[in-house]
Amino acid sequence: MRRYFYLLKYEAKTILRDPMSLYMCLFPLLILGLSTYVFPRIFASMDPVREMAMQMAMLLFLVVILTFGGFFLAAMGTFLLLEHKDEHTLSTIAVTPVGAGGYIRFKMAYIYLMSVLSNIVVLLGTKVLAGEHYSIGGASLFDNLSLAHIISYALISALFAPTLALLQAAFAKNKVEGFAFIKGTGIVALLPALLVLQTFHGAKQYLLGVFPNFWPTKAVMLELFPIPASANLSYPLYLIIGGIYSLLILIVAYRFFLQKTQY
Image 1: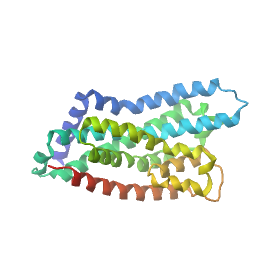
Image 2 (image 1 turned 60 degrees about the vertical axis):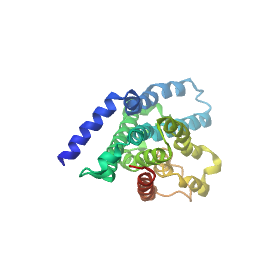
Image 3 (image 1 turned 90 degrees about the horizontal axis):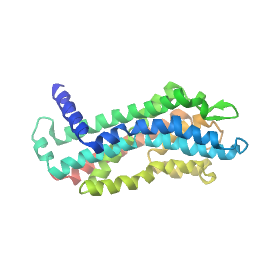
Image 4 (image 1 turned 180 degrees about the vertical axis):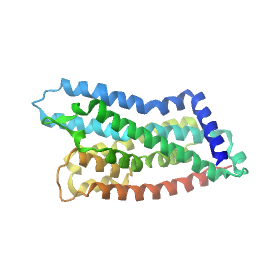
């Protein structure tokens, strides 16, 4: 256990001395600032008579809040992995008692935990600080979202961060390519926003199910906008499917990264 404590101290120093990693680590606070100050001002500037436009705006901004709370922690994980890849330091780690595989698992574990924390901070902070601004018909959407919902969502949604970090680092040859992949996968993170379109209501929503972040995002959106539909599942079932699917992809991504990385 002590060796992992020393590894954690080393990782913390690595993050703190790298401005880019530190920025990505603090990015959830920027999302919280947007959700509690900028987005409510946009809502206030809209005509309250145009209720449909208000709903669409809230849906889009809520998807941003849900998906980007932990997205940039995945980007941070990508850069940390690519640093080892660029400097070929995994060859040194491979001969230690932890081993390369153990070290990667450790790194992805704390990226996951940081992502869980960031999702909770963003969602709970938005609910407490600005929940009344996310209202339709005088009722706050966040009244339907309990602390249990927020924590369970965070636990499942955060699995996307280490998975994305491993896949991006596996395909990228260096940090420059890694940055390009991060910009590209930002679109993937926003794909659940397609749920606002009528095309993806009902059974067609599951076309988006190939993306693991769809399942927890859809679960929370169903709580915020409890519109009954025969094709919808329950909140726990969305999370269970999303959790199993995300874990399977995470295992594949981990093995793929080790296979693609020479050390």
